[in-house]
Length: 342
Image (cartoon, rainbow, N blue to C red; front, side, top):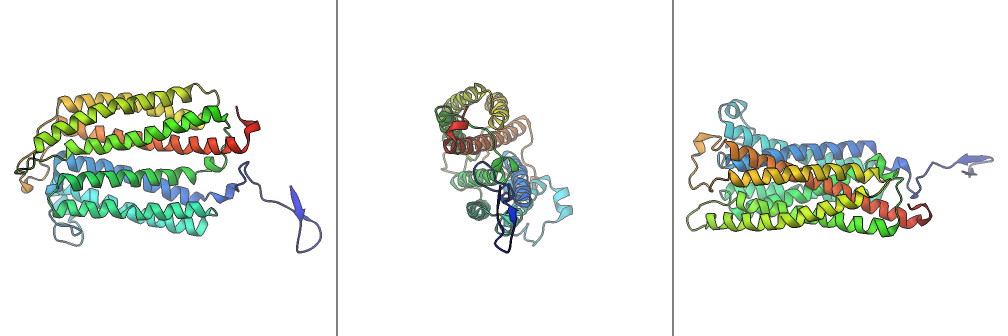
């Protein structure tokens, strides 16, 4: 398509646009790569945070934001004390997440043409702060369950937001070609949104028994028992939602952008059910006393299973967010071009 050149005679070619009216150049590769790097490092940091919780290494260093009273962590101290290695490693990794989120935000304002993506990148950066502050407060106040659970909840909000940023800055977002009838796209969007919300709630519920402690008068055993019960009951809702979502997506003939992550989501779901059952079987009572000098306080079958269970749960959340974002994108494009819908 051409237009008249305002500077003189002749005509010039318009820049190519996608079917949605967005320029493919609007999605910056730099922003996408930074968002993807932020997501990957965040996921690794969350896994390490799960190890901190399972092994109770969070009790090893009572100082924050300093590292055992120092500005920077001691490499020799981390190597000598496994607890410090896990706890300080988690802090360093999440500090790197903050830097990457800031770089992604700056890159978005410099490179991105879509204003809403720039705003989203700002929210992503701002969402780094609450988990960091809550993490520090849990150290100061010796891991109270309420602060620890809030810490998990805010961390999951951040990882969901950075996942969305990575999805909307990917080349596939502006180049999306899948079109579905609204009668098909609507239920998929609803199920995907329910999956995201239910998984988020499930992760927060799972954090309750994991952070229960037997502090004097704290009711740790009761909190763990009730938390486990609610977590197990809600798991049926999560399982049902994901199976229904995967079933809807698998019934479509041409929806690869949501088909592949849906298959991954379904596989991760069955793995998670097994891990959840095994974790419950090997569950140990909450600790009453922890000797900080011991470093890695706990390291056994339960700790490995619990950490893996949490890691897979977060991966399930990420996949659900990817599916949800892409499903709503397809629905928007399908509504704009109903004649192209399948």
